Image 1: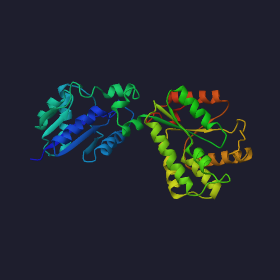
Image 2: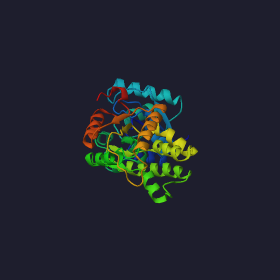
Image 3: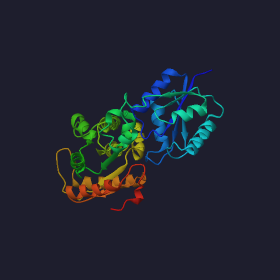
Image 4: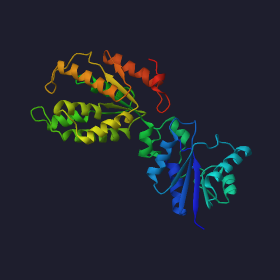
Length: 336
């Protein structure tokens, strides 16, 4: 008989304790099934949690249990509902090993006719729980995979024309919230590579890729929030301004940007223009500001406009972040 393992859970979020159990199972059986439940204990959608496991363990068969039994109980009625549900999912497949780190390993293994494999039930090998991570992911960062951790961070991007305060507010908010920020890669690239204040067409792809790499690095060290200075949509707008068109890869990355960030803030052009050597004038700023707004509207990206002094803008951001919950709080529910 083929050694077929099974484990189940919410994985809310997936952590190194879960991974220790999965890896133990993969070393002992020929095939492993992971059943992952929908649950109200986390706003992170089921398919995102399931994809963590798929990315980390491509050989695992992941089953998304959208209609699985609710709750977590040793009540016999609940145990029977769960046993019947899992047996229904298996549709006659014979599980030989049931993996868990919890009390339910006993009744599930009996129902499945499988060996009861408890892995690190005392949490000695990996002293962590999903509850602990939900309370403070940053404190328990060492117990969470990079793939998982990036989805626990609220990504906040600031867009706008040149000299509208994007860099200033990004850095100030990172200090205030004791987290990381991602500076504008394009500005650094332009400063290093410009010739007569111009850069080549292909350079805009390099900027878009370099900026994302900078974001990804900062994400893994962020504490709850990552504040980002501009994005590929701004790079796309600059490509149009320089060359009248944009490279294909940049166009694709800019399209994906609508889903990459949780919140978009547009910095208004109501502050004094800082006429440095690398900028092209206040009139150009006003035109670019209108073009960015039009582009955001065309992409159907909701954004919040920030006006006033740095302190006033930061207070506006604070009000939004106070109410915003990723995956849960719809944009239309925000009242600021």
